[in-house]
Amino acid sequence: MFVDLQSLHTTQVITAIGALGTSAFGVVQAFKPVCPFINRIGFSGIGKTVSKLTPPGQGAASPINALPQKEVLNSLEANWVNGTDLASQKAIAKSLVKLHMNADNAAALAAATNVDATLLTAAAVSMSTGVALTQAQTDANSRFDLIVTALLDECYQRADQHYRNWTRGLAAVVAVVLALVGGWMIGGEPFWTYLFSKSGGIAVIVGLLATPLAPIAKDLSTALTVAVNTMQMVKKP
Image 1 (cartoon, rainbow, N blue to C red):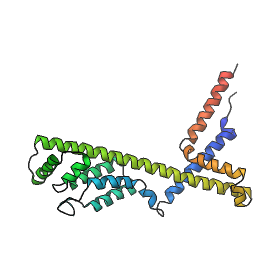
Image 2 (tube, one colour):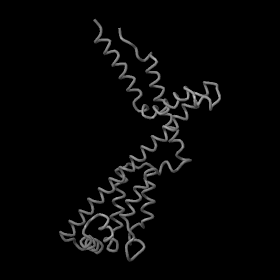
Image 3 (cartoon, rainbow, N blue to C red):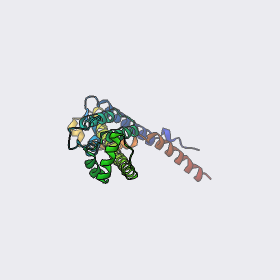
Image 4 (cartoon, rainbow, N blue to C red):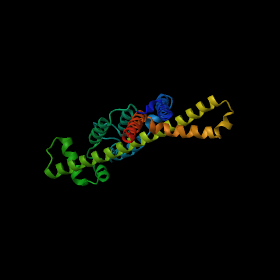
């Protein structure tokens, strides 16, 4: 005879904790309009990298026919806040960096990317005047392109991880608060007494488990059902 694990307390608890975690993530999402800093989490690293790759140059405040550094950062921040696809964001950032390069700032860009400054400056001059690049200039420009791609990929991946970690942390805090409030409401005792009681401790543990359990609660319940039923079959004479 198979055990219906869905009727057992364990799966109900797992499902409930997972639902709490999902609700906590929803609360974090709902607070984004009133807490704009949430959407900007992680962008500081992108800003630092892109700032190094968009120097103003020696002879002008900003390169001609290109966005100034401030506008480049504003454009990238708008894409980050709005949740544009990560691959598209990196492609846009790379295009703006390359568009920003000219003869005045090529040496600074070469220093930031460890490329030969003389060749990169010559390549920038050739591209701005429409002259065909020499093989050496083409090689330097290609190396610059690859290094910029690698730097942007690294900073965007780190920023995305930073954002996900912080939102998970915020959701965990919300889940703990919700669990504490929920437990207190059904307990009927003074909040501070409840907070430092055994029930309060259980509520904190439930809140901390809610966020990591949220994505896997259903699968975990199903896996437990299959595991118990499998063991029943193995032990069945």
